[in-house]
Length: 331
Length: 257
Image (cartoon, rainbow over all chains, first blue to last red; front, side, top):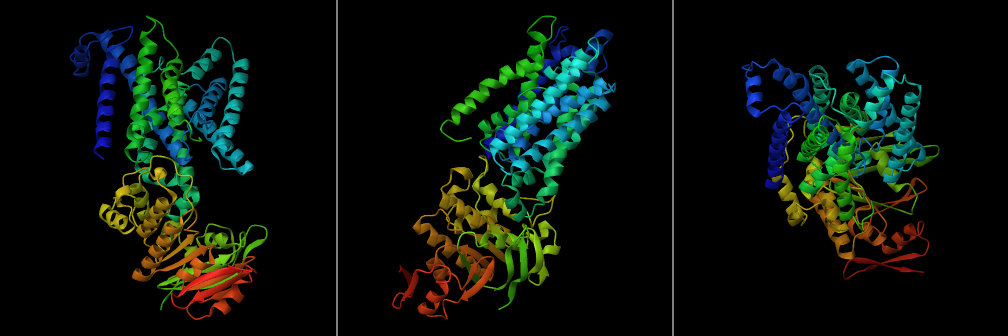
């Protein structure tokens, strides 16, 4: 019991430290005292406060929001599918969402709001297709979900490629390319605020429903007998998670692997998948993306690496470690 | 004795009826067994009563209230069921598993883990030392005890059990049935249990319903019937069985022809 509480505090502390550290780093360095002055409105350096509010703060905040959203969504997927390999990446939602955003770009609807709606609708559609495929095969097993997810993700990827092929090579192509690798580079205060609102509402609802999500992990039949209206509630949870993922993916592009790996790290630390597991998974997701983004900005001076490269490099060893721990057990 | 569960002319199934015209009643303090061969519709019958299978005709009442007209949460306050849970993800402790039993009686915002009840139940079911263990690490017998405590937590007047002795060793099977019998007798509840072993049914159930091809074909009341009468009835299901009763020990045993 105490242990869980300790982990929450440690993760929270780590997150805040990294957040503050991230604020100071970048091609334009800001010191902690600079930031204090800016926040207190005492700064006379217009340049510094511009950098802080328009670039640094929105970007770092977005990293936290994206990490929280993907980490929590991943944790919820694991529970709802009762399967540690379920994640927004593998169930087709992430690909679907980026397809939606890409579609919005090609159709000429480039405002963040329109892209978010596109990401939400296509993300929901791909999840729907995955569930339909599983239903058609009639086999509710891990493998079926993963296969269906891979199929739908591939179809989504194919459509994205098609869109790239048709896209105007000067403007749209670059914009779409940006989605498939994930980046926080073009974040602005306005976009960040939109995403914040888009993520916070479903996230709070999800955290309030953590008990019901735990019940879903027992399977539809058992959860029904315990008194949960599983059909309605599952759809509700799918809408909330897709909304959350779409609000992030529409602005940052696909940030690979965080949704899969954050809950695994959370489980390795806490040894449980209930209660604090969800928020811890979110914290870990945020820490992963903060570190990834920090490296993306700082590894190449003056340059910018796509975020997914770094999250994959950070996350792969964890997945390998998990597989090693699971050796001898059937997945 | 008051009637707790009343099932009337139940027909259910998908294309063909799997459950055909089943009527039964359970009274307070009664444990009723269902015996039948594989695929005769026993488990489906339990699912239908729980409202989890397409119903064609008939109704189910608990304490004179129609269960199919209730919403799912309310129904879970009247009827509960023990199923085979073999697909639980790692990361749920025994305590959390038992606590889920009180979902039906808690409201959305004022939920709290009732630790005292959980502790008492865990002691009753001999799983107190396991409370903080991960559910998936338990043995089958321990898992079944956790499920029973979860059922006790849900605390419904009627509960259904689908092969509660499945995968248990000899000792544990008796222990499980004793626990079930105790909770029914002491709290005047009613239980309907699907059983495979005729001896266990004769030993622990007040009445036994024999089921074949979706219908209830006969009824055995062990306390009122001789072993010859019982043999004749059970032979409708298992033609080669001969049931005997040891008059000194008041226990049943069987031969195969």
